[in-house]
Length: 304
Image (spheres, rainbow, N blue to C red):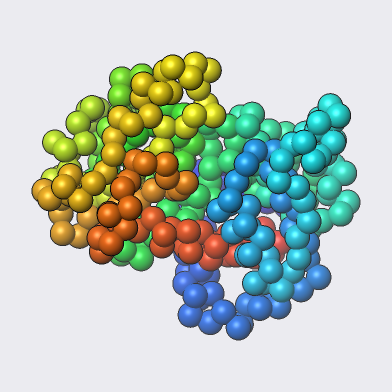
């Protein structure tokens, strides 16, 4: 039985397989419409979500299965003090696979040790978000054709941004990938990511506070919001929340084939005027996320 807790749980070969399956789903949706008939996905969301939860639910429905679950802690027995392990064990009797989001790092790992069915990490605190990374990877593959030889700008909240951490882990396995880390000093990429991933794998990176100066060299610009829910001090959040706002004017010196990405939701870090730019890919990421989650469900349920 397989789980997906961390993007590194998947080999690059398995990621290629998922991407190929997703592309086949895009081209031949009818072929997959009953692949999970009789199967149930449990969505255990202890933290608010729109795209990820609905994407998982849409994915299992389009595969012919069904879903059950909850969308906030208050509507689960966790509000009575039940442990994550007990919740997962109970749900394991009702469903065939679990997608879990939780504010505490490591909660989906604990769930996977108790559930008895495959568990997918749908985001755990500021740690990891592997299925968003799968959506990102399919988007990059469809836009760029390859994961090699890319300069990737990561902008905004690099400290708490679990999507950023997962994407760095994923792309660090490919050839000649360079990172430009754009953030306020208070929201820099954690030292453990720089030492355990970037330095350890001899991956080129630079840290800067300037989005404008970085723009001309980027093949991909991955914007992120400053996450209010990760701050202990509201004054710090208010001071930092508008550190970077992408506008059409800031794209003047960008490459013609730049891919602008964002895991969403956005607040105001990308203005709506940028939506009309042909380089904007963030709504494509949403669609690609559904297809990759469909492919992942098929893989973990071992559906041929």
